[in-house]
Length: 93
Image: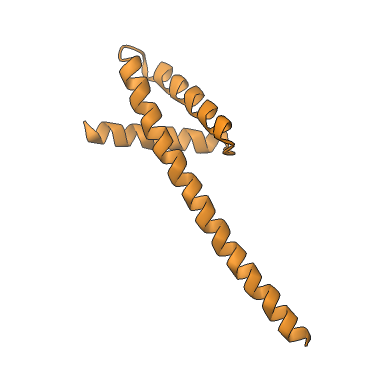
């Protein structure tokens, strides 16, 4: 009987791990998409700004959007998302 219960909880744990990984991947994809759009908008609105100024504008805008949507993030995640978005935008030119 104990093994039966133990196996059920093990199966639930495996399911929850897969669910968490899938959810985390979706959130990262969403952040990436939002970051690309944000970087494009900053580039269009501030074409003469320095790289640092553009980064700060993109960072602040992205942080605001994510906060409004209830998406939790870290500073490092935003930095990486913006740097990756800049690479995507530059590649598309």
